[in-house]
Length: 557
Image (cartoon, rainbow, N blue to C red; front, side, top):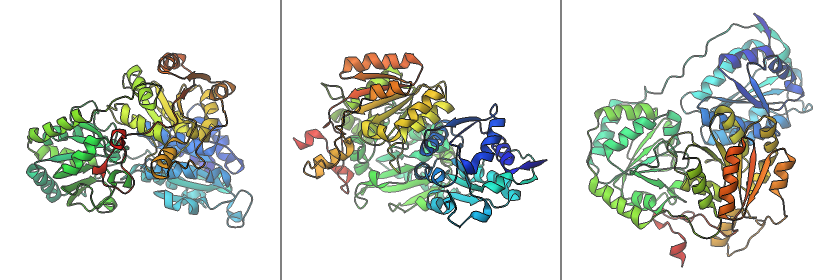
């Protein structure tokens, strides 16, 4: 059938099973929005308050659902406002498709009004991007974009469409979206047998789980693998929920703000099995001393991650679920009870406890865990509150913690929470924010109100930029340069002004009461939690130091 480019965009979205698009209209993309209006009963559009919020919402939708998130923006500043959200998705391997529209083809490259080379701008932060100058190439380009976003190691793809291409016509034929095949042809029997040999010979193995295990959907296979290896398990920030944190095998997060048990245990082990993790600098500390008593065995879908940040002794390349399935079929059950008892003794020695006294971050997260029975989707901004959410909520299934791990994007959370609630309307969705981060995305609160999305925004309000202040306190002789937020902003009044409910909690009893109200309110809620400005995230590894030098407050006294 003969369709315009704008009509083809909508039909291709329907082909891919897209039910929600996050975006903001503008002149160059009007043709697409006009068609979107005609199909509003098939594709829901959520207009964000800012295009960055739309990109984060698409990201949150993708992380929570496992499907591709879609965002749209117009040319020029509309497109560039997506950049931080695209980069966030790129760093954490999140599949989103960003559709932008540009000035007409004859005006490209002439500094036209609201023109920018968005394909050039986003080249380093996308898996691939396209500019479609011929309507005859539009459908196949959009299909390819969705396929690239989902296949192999997922990531964002951008498609830029000049406005005259959205108006031009060509023949369109429906094509059913093809299923995405798991990467298995790179998995060799030699590599599998070598991995099994290394595991069988180890006396003190440790399993380190990253985000690849979440993306692959390998939780069941991982659970079986852990049982067969009989080894303790730690994870990265991105790997949370891939392995049940209530399991006795679990020892906590690894790295800069990881537990002492995980940091000391990995430093002692003789085999570290890395499952879908890229060994970021926040995990390694000093790479020259990282796990220096161990051989390292790495499972990853991306060959570029092998020997990139740390040299490994062996690897298996491929989809994590496929790798673990093949190993589980061949691996004989190991017995490392002596080693595990040692780790259990460390767990008893270095208990994870809630600080007493006043209202604080760990207490808030622990109370949220209890009240939600461990079943909420937790979204975070970036900073101290992010680490507390990682440390004190026990994640028992994947896609339960949504956070910007690689880019560390302040302002990510509220948009992502909106995307998560859209994808999972029956789940309780809570965004954990600091007051500094909330200021960067609070305009999206009105997006949640307008679209009747009952997300709960918990602000850990210490009136400072907490994590930066912590570093200033520990490493900069208490020179608190530009980190005090003492302007008296009232977030409860702000919530009311935007149509949400607002509560304030200054102590534990007040927080317990208002959080229960928030769960029952079934509308967007902001809880302003007043905590101490000098509260810190413990444990900690100083930048560039070995993870074996992990310390907490007791070590400083």
